[in-house]
Length: 457
Image 1: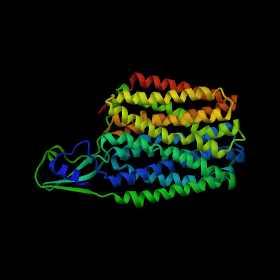
Image 2: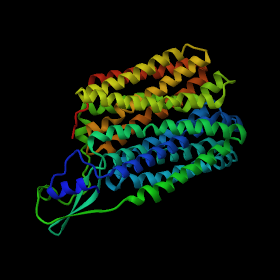
Image 3: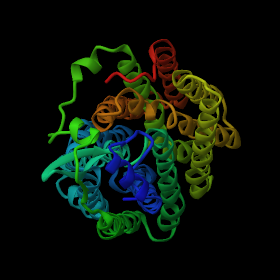
Image 4: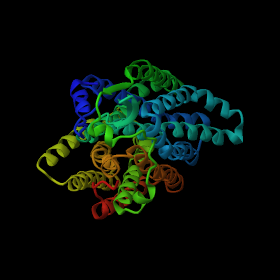
């Protein structure tokens, strides 16, 4: 713990602008978590990248492919709230580690799973779906755990006149949280780029099974780094205070505080955050899952590494730009609610314009530019609605984010499945894009009318 915080604790002046992570610890955790998010998305996007090759080898229909792709999100919805709850209670880093071992091993073993499923014929798809559900459930805890870890954690012990008190101290002070977490979400683009570049190379020269094996091993390697490097720096913080102070008077031994769900459920701003996130996630997950297939079917002569890399190059700089713009607007004393609505509006406006153009073009370059704009727009979403739970529920951000992501994943599996069903029946990509644009419009209207950044609890 740095000296400034020790001094403040000794004087009984723990304030909201202080954090218990030192500069070095912030750097270590940032690099570790953004790398972990990169590996999470790299393993997540292996199946969308490989589904054309796997479907051809296993003779899957478009509906079969859509079922396999969407089943990931069935599991993803199951563990969001649970992951946030256990992270708030026991520490996000422990939950992330346990889950990372699981989803890395499943990715590594996926070729064996697919080949084994082929021998049971009529049960092949249900068997693969079950494994994909488990994979989604393990990955579902990552973001709630990460937002809980970066918001606050009960990890300090206070000794006051011989009595031990547990303090819920902040890993990051409030004005750092949204930008820190927003930058971490850029790891999703890095992971998708990793799969697009390296995965396309491995697919072309070695076959689809090697993509699963290599990326799965990389996930296991990251889990080892998390356990034996980042988490090795954890330590109990014992602060001795010789005389009573305001800090001692105000703190008592505490247990994990129950989340006041009824208070959250009764506020329209909470539901605006949840539903807007769900609308944008529908667009993101549909494109995340079907983008390789769209270019494979519509532009069969396009290079795989081009279509799987270029759109995702836009996400990191757009995330950084949105973060910079948010900081500048807040520095000019714009209200936080106004800033969140403005940034989210930029996201939806860019995405819907691109979806409109893409549904009416047959030109490869135009389609690629439009897809790049859509993915880049997600960087604005990551600095608006995605960090809104930290505004609304600073004391329970992990749990609230988990619920938000649970609802957000529902359009993910429904949208991904329905996209496959639409394509099976109509072969119409414009219909898929128009549906995504309509849902985006609904989300924008909800957030503009009911959205807020005022804390509920």
